[in-house]
Image 1 (tube, helix red, strand yellow):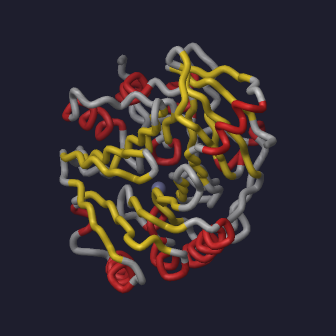
Image 2 (cartoon, rainbow, N blue to C red):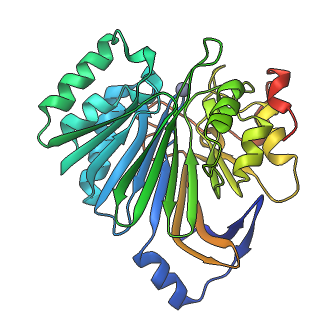
Length: 332
Ligand SMILES: [Zn+2]
């Protein structure tokens, strides 16, 4: 293990050293998140404790066939079966590789497919039609879960891991996406898609009474200034933030979200694929005094970087774009 163990709490994290006995217990029961460096896209693998089955949370980039084949190869090599797919929203950079993935990956006996009832899905774009055909033809039973607008679905991911999938309503023509709040013992992780601050704020308001607090936040819209509002940061209060970033406009981590995430007390470096390569987080869900144990590692340039034609760059070589709507910075 070359990474670092942290205790993660509201708004921060602290490095810890584990006894070899605790390490053994941890390794026997961890949930793993791998955010792959795929350039201008997003592909996250959530491997359940025991490493026999996994869910993908979005899977797409500019080289979808190569990415789908590479991820299927990875699952084969690791002996992991694909058990579920979450498409946060129907954009090619988030779902384009799923078609190849379901053709080539080892599948669980039933594969669950979650999506929202987003008007982008209708009329379906050609690649979504093909994806539907592949899903219906795959060599496994298919269970579909459609999250209604302003709805919430509780989904048992397996092996003691649960998720709540939220879908909000469109705000002034912007994007919508499923927010997926994952729970494993004391651990909480929030995955978002590509949305704007207005959508985030409306979803939080309409979902009053539900808890969005999480140790880990997947930053919205690749780190664009138009997302990851102050209100979202306050509601989640993450100790770790991760972003899937590329080099082109629309897939960059910009100054606004960095400030909103890092400009508050606590050590909250934002990990991003463009700099760190694959981001690997593991947690056994154990906690002590409100602090949850995580292991954080990176793989540079990333397992599928070649397939996705993605690279990593030095942090100090990035000239961050600024801007973004003033509304994102509204007080908590
Ligand atoms: Zn995107």
